[in-house]
Image (cartoon, rainbow, N blue to C red; front, side, top):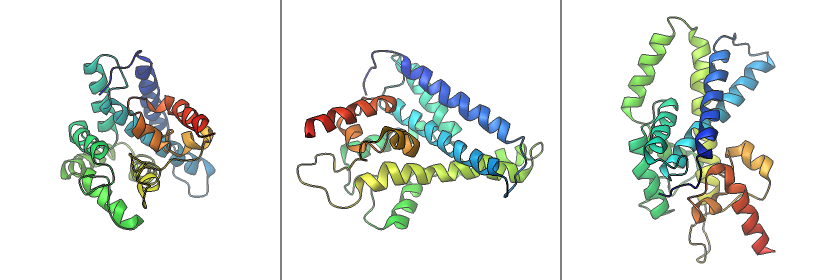
Length: 233
């Protein structure tokens, strides 16, 4: 855990939360049309914003959202809950195990298998029966006012797709395969392309840099990447 020098992370977190809530609220008022581009655009945007919720909770686990620890953890709890009722207190120890024992049998994010086996192992680590019950209750209450197909397409589907986005760019790509003995973080990193790095996973694909500097918030990882790239020239 670190203490950030400013509270800029609070504003970044609130923007992501507000965008997620605003876009989702508007989307749930739109009909689902498999022939309409807007339906697919909304799914893509909401998937990205769901990923942003998790990245915000992740940054709170490293203490980089707010200078005040209570505010930092409150935003972490809130972001995690909005992401399909994830529980911050459950995520917190597992994520720090990942950092301490990266790519070993003690790493809850790691699995010695192919993509699908690893993905389902990843899901088993983070999905609880409490989440499923809370999602089921919420779905059945919300469908009293909102058509079920809209809830499935705009609320549930983007959450599922974002787990794929987080897993693929934030776990599978950086940690798969063998890593050189001199690589202390057993992690790879995306090539330097800030636009793609943001779109793909909020710069989280700069994963070696994240492990090397876990106290850097996601929105500053591009600077760490540039510094590492400059040293390698």
